[in-house]
Length: 209
Image (cartoon, rainbow, N blue to C red; front, side, top):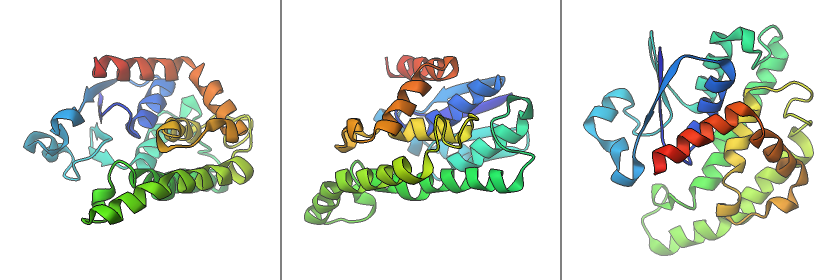
């Protein structure tokens, strides 16, 4: 059995959605960020980075959302969550997920975790003020050049959709009005109607209560 360590309102939601879509037998373990549990010695044995998600497999622990999503898609090929028989299409999926991980998530993190990049209060506040514009710019590129529709890669649902939905959940908190991004907003609504997404969100809510 797989074990997914997650925290509500984090990028771990994407992996949980993918596991649900795949019909995987897995256990979900919440890491309470409110109690700084990600820095507990026991959790650091699982993931020395002190972050989520972390996926415990029979061969070891995997971290970083693009890696987890690719692993889930390859481990459950019958779910057809990635283009496993087309190297170019599979690379395009990794390209999109890497953009979310390395650019969009970092742009978002400057608001809640500006302390990672500066110690000076004025510098941190300046970074936070840039978040709405930076996030809008990231999503405007997704809107115009990356989101083929109805799903990220076109007619076929993939792991990219779980990841985009997860990151798009942060827009309002980052000061971006989703109404300015109609394709992204429509995608988020479409995703919210999927049973796997509803199950994952319900699990998150139960962890917060």
